[in-house]
Image (cartoon, rainbow, N blue to C red; front, side):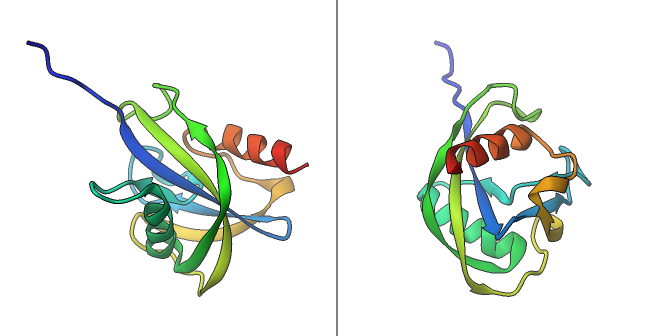
Length: 134
């Protein structure tokens, strides 16, 4: 009998402040030192909605609410660690103070017109969000 394999579930957050997008600098591989949308793995027994609120607080110090669903990204090659499926949420800041923590070496807002190179498929995700917001 063969064992069943399934992808890992992750969440990512899209948080704009005017024309500035919140990104984190990854502290660990893969893509250590690269910028990415804040997010991470969903814990067993946790909803994806709770996971993105938790990850935002852990990585950026910010308290957020969910504005809506951006999309689901499931390309099996999007993460070199293995097949991951990410659910991306559009977020609104409610409080907190911007500080880096957990898996983030830095947390910073970048103008949409001058984003740094990004990890994973986050450049494509950002393009999708901006296209939908127009």
